[in-house]
Each structure stands twice: as structure tokens, then as C-alpha cells.
Image (cartoon, rainbow, N blue to C red; front, side, top):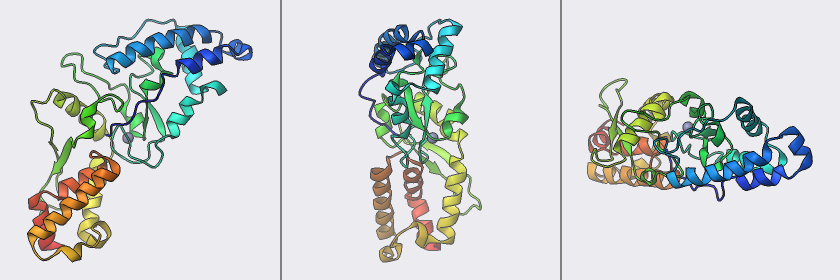
Length: 276
Ligand SMILES: [Zn+2]
């Protein structure tokens, strides 16, 4: 999970520009209509921050749906923004799940239900393979809780979760602890996002492996930790600093940042001090 900058424009201008190309219009006969329509839709989407409680799916013909999806799958030259967005965060934190190396595009409003938004850049979020595990999960029509949107949800700049566990257990059971207050208006969305995006990935397995590695080879996970062993307090300060560094480097809700925040809990910190 990571807040990222929204693309500068919606992509509709590229669509309109592409539609002026005669050759393209032969391949994609609905291009101009689509371009104009996309501009209007993108404005609505942007004003609503993509919120599925506000943005409704429009009824479009099967033919038009196919045309948009074809455009997305094989965008003409003028629509390079789709490929650029897909590559824009390679090697960085996945904005959707907090994992690593987002090289796919997640349609926030899913392209099956909202095909008219399939080429709107604001709806295209770089994501890792969590994109495929997410499927059609988007929001709960009863509670209105929804997946977080990395272009619009400012709450993602704060630490949202860490993990509680007992270091004496082998292997420990990791449970999600929400660091955002239950009275915060974003709380239900954060919880929905964690349940439907983050916990569908191998996040907990990854954390478990990292913890196992820390116990087996502390030097590999905790750089220079032997220099901070004068007392439990000193070691705890060292872990907090390491955790803050990870947050600054990869965002406060990357898997790495969540791991280091979790082992910085005082009980875990003391356990590592005594046992590793
Ligand atoms: Zn991901």
C-alpha cells in the first residue's frame, strides 16, 4: 500500500489525438466518440476520487465495450501513456499491496464491470501480481467500505498496520494490528483493503520467512546491530531508527516497513536483544 502521484492527465487527450489518425480510425471506428466520452468520464471520476459509491457503471453496448478493451490491450502508438504507467514504478513498492516490483496495471474500477474507464489513466494503478489475485473485489454495497485508491486516499501516507505476534512461538501466528484509529473515517476502507488486497497475497508468508531469517542470521537482517547492544533501551532505539529508515525509503506501508515496525514493538525488541 502506498500513496502515489496521480498521472498528469486522464489519457483522453491521447485518445482524441489518436482518433484523428485516419488509419487508426479504420481499426478502431469508435475512437473519436470514445475519446470525447472518456474526457467527460475522467472528469467525473477525478472529482469523485474513483469512489465506487459515487461513480456508477454506465451502460455501454457490447460493441463499444469490446472496442475499449481492445484499445487497452493493444493501444495504438499515440496512447503510449498506458505502457509508460505500467513501467513507471518497476523495482519499487506496490501501491496496492505494499509488495515489491509493480509491473502490471490494476484497473481500480474493474474493467469487467466498468469497461468505460478501462483507458482512463486515473483508473490505472501500477501493481504487482496482487492485481490478478484481487479479481472483481472493489467495495461492499452494504457497508460502503471499499479498496483504497493510491492516487486519492491520503491516509496511505500514514502507517496503517503492523503485526502482533509472540516471538516465543515457532512459527509465530501473525495478526494484523490496525495503527489507524477505529474512529478514523478511513478505518473501514483500510480494513477492507487489507482483507481483500493485502491478505490475498503471500504477505504473511513473506513476513514469516523474514522473521525466520532474522532468528537464524540476525546479521543479514539487522545491519550493525552488534554496535547497539549496551542495553535493551539502546537496542530498541536502534530498531526504531531502522524502522523509520525503511518507512522513509519504501513508504510506511511497504512489507519491509511493516516488518521492521512490527519487530520494533518493545516486547519483540527485548526478545531479539535476549535471544539473537
Ligand atoms: Zn501488489
